[in-house]
Image 1 (cartoon, rainbow, N blue to C red):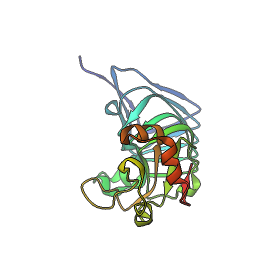
Image 2 (cartoon, helix red, strand yellow):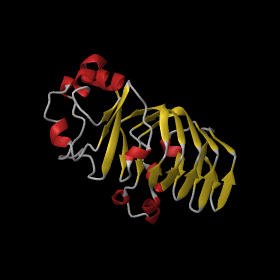
Image 3 (cartoon, rainbow, N blue to C red):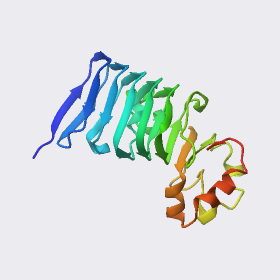
Image 4 (cartoon, one colour):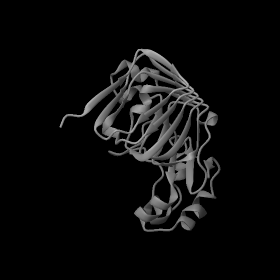
Length: 209
């Protein structure tokens, strides 16, 4: 059965509630779309959600199903938005090297609030994280990780965890301005404890927890 395609593009919507929850649909939020003071309810996998060239202003995202490995936020301008729910491996901000699509030049994030979200392995690219509000412990956010990589990797993190990679196949891009992890999943994956992670985190300035 072919998925139904739902398009939102070439328009401005204000004070609307968009329910992107139908598992049988693919949602396309396309170019020349501006959403202001809207609530978007997301309950589909990343492969069914496409965002390119969209401006979100003072919007609320209610993520009802964990959104995994979603990079297309970098095709959006996000200003004054709020995020709720679980996001894993998502990237936000300005990262034109990600692809040749000119709409990646639009990517930005400022004045956004993640305090009601659970972020794990999520990065802020090419934008100032000082304008953002990050979730608190058991999430922790490392600011300016690339520049501080030598300092961060100079200590022994429990379970062999490394907060930033600057070389090798899985290295973090130079434009990475912040990265947020969720301590319980890091601890489980590395066979360590949240307490051991926090003991190392507390040694550093520039980590929000």
